[in-house]
Image (tube, rainbow, N blue to C red):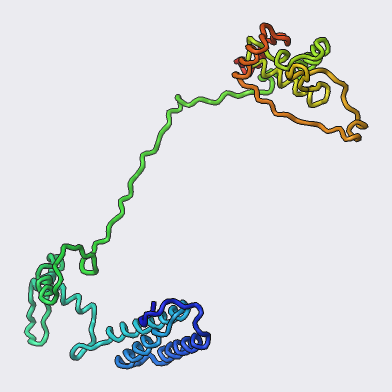
Amino acid sequence: MAENGMAYDPDQDPEETRNIRRQFRNLEQELADNQDLSTEEVADKLRSANRLFKQVKAINEATKDSGLLLTISQIGAAKARAMKSGSGAFDVDDFVARLITYMGGRKPVASVDDGEEDEEESEYDAGAPLDWEKIGRRALAKSRRVPAMDFMLGPLSVEPKKRAVAKRARLEKNKEDMKKPQELREEDITRSENETTKNVATIERLLINSGEVNLFKFIVNPHDFGQSVENLFYLSFLIRDAKCAFQISEETGEPTIMLCEQPTDEDYENKLVKHQIVMEFDMATWRRAIEVFDIKEPMIPQRPKSEMRIGSKWYG
């Protein structure tokens, strides 16, 4: 919000906006072309910028005002550094040196007189502590603020810190504790027979003899949940190859399966569509099926657990 109380106005008159920008550019050009302005001239430029800022209602013009104010501030800072005190210009290094001497940081240790009155040399004790309270009391007389504890880290006394390089102890491994990994050759791995093909064929032969049968009565092994899952897995290959049909019985409402003739290419040309089903079969379903259908013995015989030897060890 500007000083005149008017808020941001994106719909400011375009002609007024162009006029404000033109005046800002003129002020910037005058400051850039004339770096030797007097203090009064710099102050006059600042007052002109303040009057112009009262007309600013958009972001672009406010940005230009900020840039102009920064330029005027830099010129003012340069003027302050060039100010003369007495017969000479203000020297920061000389001021710091005198400040150190005033606080007792440089006390004359010995004076050498070589007989000439015009030349005197003094040696100073550079390691003497600085009396900050002395300069503090002088500054307190010129300030109304309550003195507060603070820490000053400046150019008066700075000691560079040396970085300590820590040496890390090298970890030495005991060669006796190191073990070489076991090497496996091709002949060490005894490959098992392709059980999937054989078991699928076994299930197909059983379906030939059983005809249409309840799905759960056929696949569930009441003594082994794992083999029940395997039976469903092997049965899925027959259903995928269209050798086995899955349907819901209209009489009992139970899921049943049966062997069927595989469809021909002509059947698919007559718009025969394949359907897929995802069946969830967990241990709770397995137990429920045993209870509901009163399954006592498996229709698919119990298979011995397959074993595989890797190296000198056997895995089931």
